[in-house]
Length: 315
Image (cartoon, rainbow, N blue to C red; front, side, top):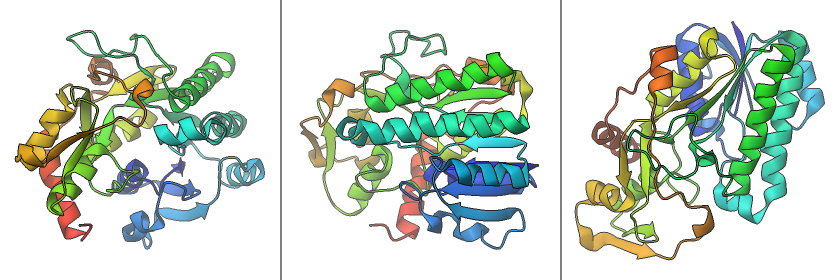
């Protein structure tokens, strides 16, 4: 198939690109490199399936129109977005434009050619978990940050095109994803930052009291979920979660990674108003509709990520 992947130079996008190329598709990657890095795609440069990398923005309607008119994509995996919660609090306009207006621009092009839309949302749209079975897709949402609010707005537009135009669309909500190629600096994920600090002899800093929990999904499991959502019409018109189905407190995660509790420090939270106290995924719907479930344990995922950070000389 001819496939457009927005945000394909990003952390998750890079793994989605890898899987699509392995499956034999022709892919075009559109990324403005505000979060992604072209080096993430270095190993695919000579791959015959990677037709073009375009540095550009989903806010450029003419660029999108030209791409769709020329290549008539069968699927658009739409991962391109502003992803930083604190940035959305500091500058909500940019996040709204990228995540909501940009998604509208994608939808309008997909409507022209009946292109399936796989929209990458986030578990950050949910209110805290109160059920021992975890968060299902029916769980209450809470836009605790402009990032979450922009994603909810985009989700509703994506689903509206399914109902109004019968456009095949699906909203996917992966939980906290980690693994190789994730940034290890301030914009990276907590697990990658913890591992880098461990390896470089620094303390591990935890915001607040560290009792907040996260459900951590290994990136290759996430990419498999993303790709399969595009292949199956069983999820069209649906919202679907993906996670490990196991949560862990930040205190326990830090202990698991560094071992030495004297290297764990607690610091004042930079955005306590947008903190979600407990995140635990219930992925039964993904298992039912896609036959998807995670394959990599947290311990194995940490081992693989630590090995990659060491091998990449990121310490």
